[in-house]
Length: 327
Image 1 (cartoon, rainbow, N blue to C red):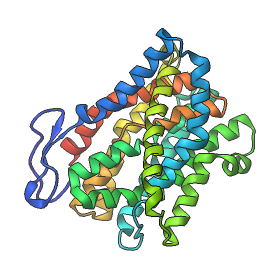
Image 2 (tube, rainbow, N blue to C red; image 1 turned 60 degrees about the vertical axis):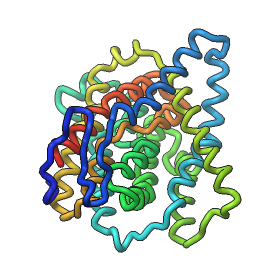
Image 3 (cartoon, rainbow, N blue to C red; image 1 turned 135 degrees about the vertical axis):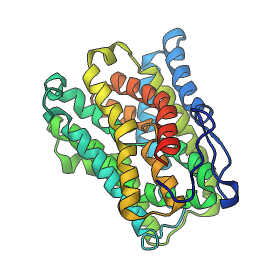
Image 4 (cartoon, helix red, strand yellow; image 1 turned 90 degrees about the vertical axis):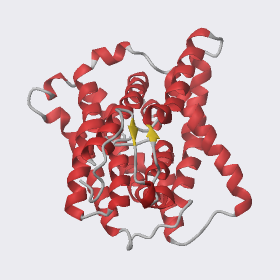
């Protein structure tokens, strides 16, 4: 898909970029995703084989949802200035990619044959898995495949897409639960954090330097505790009870979205760094906060936690597919 980049990956789990062009020389996706998967596994083991049982992790869920994750999202959006005009093509492609993922996820219950095997309530909580993404893995990968410019490009995608994805995640749960969309959006701490961060950034405001280390540490704590809480809430039996929904949302996240990204690269004529960032963005594992959001809004958190785990494992294959085959 990209000009002057015909080299194939050396194996199924590594992608080599062009060092002369300033891009990272090699990415090992399995190693990149291992920390997230290991934290989920640790949470699962701690919850089931130590005195730190489910009652402890319920409190951790609330801490992550109402304080730690909002701080993380706000900082992710404001840390780099957003130049929406200079990157308008990438912004347009990113928004269309996000809308495509949301549309495919929402359409699942209405598809012939597929819809008849999907429970509407389970779908409301799990639809977000199909289009949300792990921003920490995305930032790490962007730097490795496209250098410092890749991080800047991804920061723009995070700034414009995270609010869209969070609204897309909350809407089916609020609608199915009949809690009122406007009220659910106004009260949702993740949406408040992302919209306020976007406004903060576009107004040219910056976090004072003396606060940055504290905020960074809070963000790191949110990632670790959120993933461990997802592991603590896992019940793999629920995955087998919703097999069609499981396969459908993960197929959108790890197969169809990379195909859409490849088409958008051609449509918007993105240059090499932008194309690499969009392809990696499209193939990310889903956000670990999917579990926290579903659980806090009264949906089947254990099922969503299982989906997060499977998505983390599938990320190795989808990133290899996107950056090794579609590229």
